Amino acid sequence: MGDAPGTPHDSRRDGPGRRRYKIPHPKDAKILGSSYSPEGARMPDVLQIPAPTPLTSFTEDEILFRDNIRQFAEQKVRPLVKEMDDKGVFDKDLIHQFFQLGLMGIEVPEQYGGAGGRFFEAIVAVEELSRIDASAGVIVDVQNTLVNNALLRWTTEDQKKRYLPRMVADLCGAYALSEAGSGSDAFALQTKAELKGSDYVLNGRKLWITNGKEAGVFILFATVDPAAGYKGITAFIIEKEFPGFTVGKKEDKLGIRASSTCELILEDCRVPKSNVLGEVGKGYKIAIETLNEGRIGIGAQMAGVARGAWEYAAKYAQERKQFGKSIADFQGIQFQIAQMATEIEAARLMVYNAARMKDASIPFVKEAAMTKLFCSQVAERVTSLAIEIYGGYGFTKDYPVEKYWRDSKIGKIYEGTSNMQLATIAKLVMNGK
Ligand SMILES: Cc1cc2nc3c(=O)[nH]c(=O)nc-3n(C[C@H](O)[C@H](O)[C@H](O)COP(=O)(O)OP(=O)(O)OC[C@H]3O[C@@H](n4cnc5c(N)ncnc54)[C@H](O)[C@@H]3O)c2cc1C
Image (cartoon, rainbow, N blue to C red; front, side):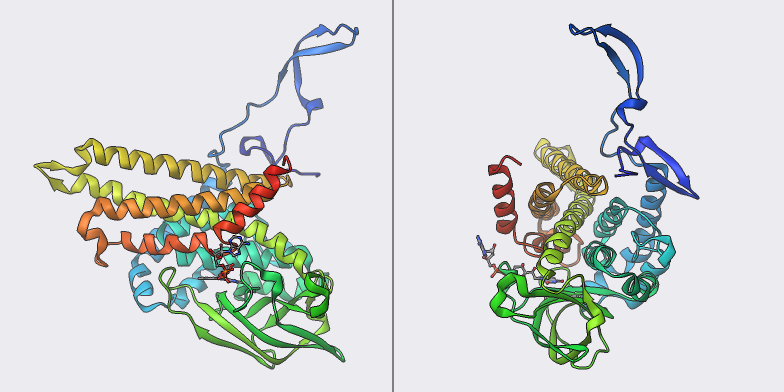
């Protein structure tokens, strides 16, 4: 763990414009006083090590990055949110701008044209975009936390050279695991892959695939041997133009309406052997490990959704007058606003902690599951209360809060339902982890 990240204020520059975070090794700590142990060994009394910094502390680079996205989301995304939601279509030019801003390849190393950033930055991007629009958040989330993550971890050097520069420049990605009959029980998938000469031939259907309409490349899971159970599952890199691959029906949804959710159809789809991702039969491992990271992203999306709705509600409460004063003057409303703010704070801390753990290479599976579970609960509660603070107006489409509530609902469903997160957490905590 040569350059394991630590707290943000421990950072030192080690490249142009970049900071790496280093945990000070105990041997670097300055001994201020000393005493003798009973055994006679000289023991330090006080170690002068940098004080731990709050989870909400950002490095200078992180602040700059966050503020740029915040400004972009306010200026470029917010004006389009209502129309995109009404039409159920994401603005193509916005996706183009995501690429231009470097938001679609945050962790891709500089040698492949990326920003060489950390997972934490991807999480901040998802939170900031979702504060304005959860559909914008999930496009960037899937690209970074699932697709790029899988490509960065499991590809050969040849595959890296073929795909990573495009993921940064203009290639949108999707992650295709679920099927009509296999959601929570994801490894019961039925899509088959048969080796014929130098190609695998894939047959089957995928359902619910985010970015389906926009994606040019798909990380898709199929089984090479149904009898082998999960050990037959293999991940493939599939390009939209591969023969036998079609994007099917787009779902008409309750929330994140501008994010496309599509069926994928594979009819004798020919995929070169060189497009197997990782090892044959190890797709289950790729799926589990990428989704563990992805869940922190969904936590960030939900934290952003909650914050966006809270900001509207807090402002409205000060503007709306009843009984001759603003409703924010009533303690009942003040307490609701305070409760919402407290829950959002807790949700963000969980997101930031899980993301920093991931960047520090500390096991984070439990924290990721807890983050997704809790943030989606907070988002649903906060957005629902925001509607109540708006009263009848909040129940109409003329005001922005009903959309936040609709968008919050998906947090409890995709990348593992709340019950599946609870199952993971229960297994870990009951085993003392
Ligand atoms: C908008 C949207 C976008 C999506 N994007 C993607 C994507 O990009 N890629 C992808 O692969 N998938 C995607 N999905 C699919 C998503 O991951 C699944 O919908 C989800 O995993 C749940 O599966 P299911 O819908 O089949 O529900 P089911 O698995 O049928 O679950 C139904 C209910 O049963 C409960 N349940 C099931 N098993 C258990 C159990 N063992 N114990 C307790 N309760 C249980 C669940 O918690 C849930 O409440 C998306 C879904 C949606 C709606």
